[in-house]
Length: 395
Image (cartoon, rainbow, N blue to C red; front, side, top):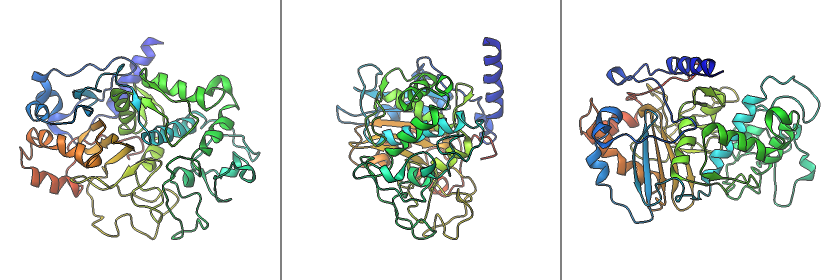
C-alpha cells in the first residue's frame, strides 16, 4: 500500500508540474497530513521567490496574523495567532468555502453510484434538482428555495430567486445560511447514508473524513450551519486553500473534481453576481486578475462575466477568496502558485492582505524586479501567470 501511495504521489506531481514557470518549475507539493515545515529565512528568496525583509516589515495590530504559502511550502508566518494550537478561532463565513469543498468532495466520492430516478438515490451532482434530495414542501422557517432550483443554484446563493431563467436570477448573500445553504447539510446527509461505510453516516462523519485527509488537527466544525461555525487555525486555513488552489488534489489524492473546483472559483451564475462562485468570493481584490468563466457552467451564456471590462485574458487565473467577518481570509493566487491566509484583517479586507505581501512578491519576481506598477498592470490583465499549474481536463 505504501509503495502504491508513493507512486500515485509521484504521478500526481508529474501531471501537475507547472508548464509556465520557466526556471522556477517545481514538482507540486503540500504538507499532506503532517506538520508544515517552514522555509528558513535564508532560503526564502530561492525557494519561495519572496523578499523576506519586506515581509518582516509588514506592520499589524497585535491581534492580526498572516501566512504565505507558495509552491506548497510554508514560506512566511507572522502574528500572535499564527501558531496552530493556541491560534484556533472562529472563522465565521470562511466556513462557506469549506462547505463548498465538502459538497464537492461528496460529489466526487459518490460519482460511481448507479444513476437512479428514485428520490434520494444515486450520485450527488452539481445540477441535480434540490427536490431530488430534500422535500422542498417541508422546509424550516425562513428557508426559501425555488421548486426548480439545483444544487448549483443554492451553492451560488441564487436558489431562492422567484425566476431562475437567464437574466432573472438574483444574488443576495445568505449570511447565516438559514435561507437556503444550510439545506445542503440535509442533502449531504441523504447522499452519504446510501453507503455509510464508504461515505460516513451523515454530514458530520463526511466532514471528519475530509478533515483527516487534509490533516486539519486544529479545526472543529459541527456542521450545524453552512454559513459559519468553523473554528480553525491559520495554518489549517492554508491547507483548505491549498487543495482548492490545486483543483481538488491534496497529498497525491484527488478529493474533488477539477471542473467543480473551477466552477467554485469562477462566477457561477453571472446574471446573479459576477463576484460569487460556489460559496466563494472573487473579483474584489486590487492588482489581481479577474475570474472570468470560460463557458458558464450550465451552458454558454449570452451575458459576459466582464461586461464592464476587458475579457481578453491570456491566462485563466482569477483570484478567489474565502471571507469571514472580522477579516478572516483565505486568498488563492493561482497564477503565482500562492495561498495567503490572514486573521483579523478587518480594515481593507483581502486587498489589504494582498497589498501587505505584494512588495515582497514583486521585489523577488525575476521579470519585474520590484516594478510594482508594471507587475500589477500585467498581472491584473491576466497577461502574467509565471507559476500556473494546469488542472485535470486542461483547466
